[in-house]
Image 1 (cartoon, protein in one colour):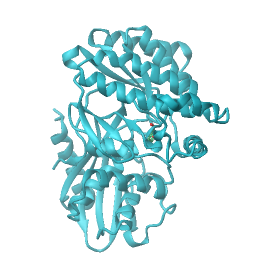
Image 2 (spheres, rainbow, N blue to C red):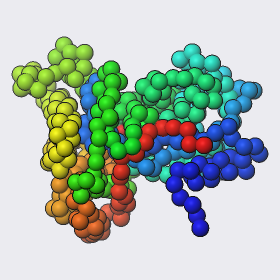
Image 3 (tube, rainbow, N blue to C red):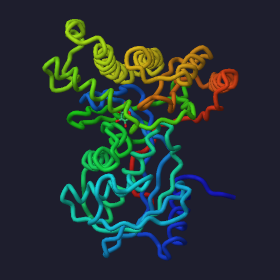
Image 4 (tube, rainbow, N blue to C red):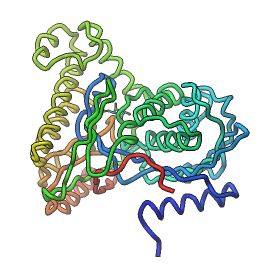
Length: 390
Ligand code: GLA
C-alpha cells in the first residue's frame, strides 16, 4: 500500500535524494501552490489580495555543501540529470529552464548579503506547472525556507517571500508581484491570507467551507500561460503609467470615490485597467468583511463580479476560463472566477457540496462539446504555508 500525507511524501523525497546523491539529506522542506480568492492584478499596484495555500506543494530535500556547488535535480523536469552550478558564478539570464528558480533564490539570498553557499537539492512537486497555481513560487519558496534553515539565517516570512520574488523578477525575468510568494510562505491551515502588498502586512482570515456545506473547486483549464511572454509586463506597465499620469505612487492610492474623476483624465486604453484595480481592491475589502461576518456564501457573487472585471476591463480571461465560469455558475456554483495571472490557467468555483459533482460534470461536458481539452478538477482546502517537514 502506498502511504499518503505530508510525512509519507517527505520520506519519499528524502529516499529519492539519498538514491541520487548517495547520502541522507539534512532535511526536507515544503512550500505550497496557491489559489487567490479575490484581488487579482492588484499586488504590483501595491494593493490587496486574499490568497490561500493549496494542499499541493513542492518539496525540497537538501544537504548543505561547503564547496560552493549548487547541485539541482527535479523529478518533474524530465531531464534525468543533475544541474551543477557554482553559487559565486550565478548571474541573471545565465540559467535556463526550471533551474533558474532555485538558482535565482540562492542568488537573491547571496545578493541580499546573506552568507550562503552550496547545497545538493532534490525537488519533487505535485503543483501542476503552468496552471496558474504558482508552481514557480512554490519552488522558490521551498528553496528559500530550506536555505534559511541550512544556513541558519532566521529570516522572517515576508523577507523570504521578497527574496523569492526577487529571484523571479531579476533572475528568471518574470515581472510578477509578491502575492504568490507571500501566500506560499505565510498562509496557514484553515485560513485565507489578507495581504497588503505595499507593507507586506498580512492577517489570517478563517475560511471555513465545511460548516457552510461548501466546497471550493479548482478547474485547471489546461490552457498553459507564460507570464514572461510580455502581456503581463505590458499590463503592469500600463498600470504604472496610469498611476504616474494621476500623480499617485501606485493605483492603490486611488480611492473608489475618486475613480470617476480619474477615469475622465486617462487615455481610453488605460481607464479600464484602473477601473479594474480600484474595484478589485474594494472587492478584497468586502470579501474580508463578509468572511469576518461569517457570511461565506455571499462571497460567491463577489467572485463572479471579479471575473467580469477581469474579462471586460483587464482582458486577461480567455474562452476556456469564461466557459468554465459561466458553466459552473449555471450548474449551481454560488460564484466563480479565474485565479492567478490569467491567459488560461485555473478557475475557482464556490459550490454547495451537494452540487459539486454536478458542477464538475457540467464543466467537463461543456469543454467536450466546445472541443477543448478535458479540464482537471480538484478540490481546494486552505492549507499550511512553507515549512520543514522532515
Ligand atoms: C501572477 C503573479 C502575481 C499576481 C497575479 C495576478 O500570479 O505572479 O504576482 O500579479 O498573477 O493577480
